[in-house]
Length: 105
Length: 186
Image (cartoon, one colour):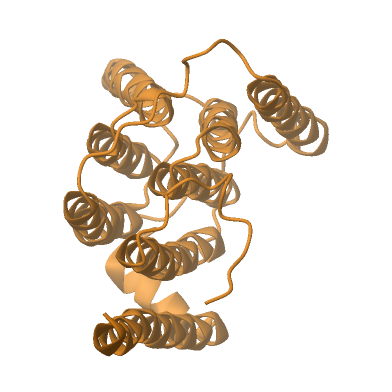
């Protein structure tokens, strides 16, 4: 049996909360859709760190399974998001999320 | 006992370096004006997160993090950023707008909410973590869980990835066809 060395889970959870808030700040503040996607990755990773921390705290592998699923969802989201960015760029539309208020055509 | 405490100090030192690298690169991703530098900072963020996962006995997730995120996803990001070309945005120019103030307030409120909720709900359990077996977090352990207890999650993940692949193909094909349609009118 392996004991948890080093900091307790609360420290990991505070890092996760800070990461999530940083990512939320980026999503709300930045106007470039690429940086919004990058900030979204930070938010998802904050959630992943909390999941894996609780998984270790409770000794249950379900949290790691959920973290891997979140990783697959994040990869899918990046595919669709970057596809949209490339499609916008081909149509010579300004890459600014404040001006993208319609998805027609 | 002495060996255990030495290991403890070592883990603390690794944790401090990884956690501050993680937080610093996260702030860097949000604050760089050039998306290329933001993507490079995110690679550092993902790498230091993988170190934190290793400290939490999640070896397979750490390996998947480096391979899938820092490898595949970030290469795609860098490719698209290079394809679109450098376009900088100056988020901090022109003084704070009401949008920026609102964004900072909302992010701060989220941070406070998360800390309060976790402190209230789980404060008692966080002080002592359970001991885990030597196989916890190994690929064999994760694979067994995925194919027995969490088979539905595994199947749903495969469907999500299939839908995303089809969506990517449709997005790319659609813009190519519309570009071809525009050629005769020129």
